[in-house]
Image (cartoon, rainbow over all chains, first blue to last red):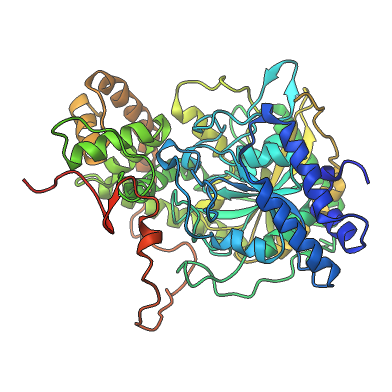
Length: 492
Length: 95
């Protein structure tokens, strides 16, 4: 079998179980693809020794007839996950040299299911960004290109998106606080799902905004997403918000039959100035689901407009609190001190040197909205608005809506270095995805078309809480009809 | 609400991030852009709406009140920039 790194999880799993390939062969194919892809800057810490050891162990398990779901499948892990003894910097200078003494629950679950770790993937610093341009490692690059313009793979899971799209690994983990799995997945033409808040344990994942953060898989197909999501989910006593619910067999729920399902089309997602190509993509996706037997229903989510501003109060507020731990005492970077500097100077210099501009900006905005005199006007108001955003969704689900179809992003991938200096412009990337985090719902991005330049475009489906299986099945039906098979031409 | 340089300096101090005085005007301008964007929340009628405390309705689990962790001094100190004799070392705190 040639080009083993180009396989998806399901194909590789079946080939492994049939004895057609070994995990070592798959792993070596990915490791050499990674070696040849330095220009993408997707993998930022390489772990070939761990990968080969895990692959050999997986081959032994397969031989013994004991092959769990992810057995022998080589994947990349976003730098936000703490991996024992392996650098885990969250894309930040402040965690330079940090070697976790423990393993995150999600990566442990994947290893228990037999997965092979190829290395750690680039990302925006502390997952704050939509273009992977805030990373201490430098930009991750989209394998898709228009002429000679280098494009962003999106963010914050930009390295994960780039690596999966360029076939450097079979799949990757991502995390999503406002769209950080779904937006990059859409920008590179792959599938990415953020499950319901509480499905995946947050333990050992470097925290950004704890009430919004969720992990999820980024894969080459909806089936692969179902396989990997199931392996990632679990109830975890170490995360008090992790749900004590059984994890269904998501793959078994992929029948492709969505006859009679009610799909909502929210009118508020038709934004002023939305490119015609996005409108067309959305209309095409609607037609595909109708063709599959779903009933299309126009719906209203009246508070949509306020999701992004409310997010930019709540997420920075939680970040300012979570990032208080980076003080130069327990781990990571500590600034060199001058004669006479006390502990306050140590904190201030350490954090000024360790945090990049966007992280500093958000920590300070968060500090401001939580400060005496503004807490009620900003933070509490945003939390009230969040209640209303969630209620919008509850109302349409109560009307019998099974899933909601929207565009995943307001545009195709844009050029690296082309974003304006206005931070709010960058925030608008998350306009279609952020509502889902605010309401704690599952959301999936599926590649569904290409723009005039040939760049991939994605659609988003939003599901009912805890019904990832049903959501994946709807996505499966959409994927089958969209028939997106384009791949970037190799230039790296 | 407009943020001036002295407010920006106060926020930086609260956040324990050193900001050089020459950067304060630009920082204040960025804050104003972001806060200007956030201001639109003022349009929403939130009368009688409770602030969200948990996005999924759940009762936090309780566990037995027993020690379940500990005796990991070495692992706890392993990443410290400065650890001495089993302690984190920091600049003098008390004069």
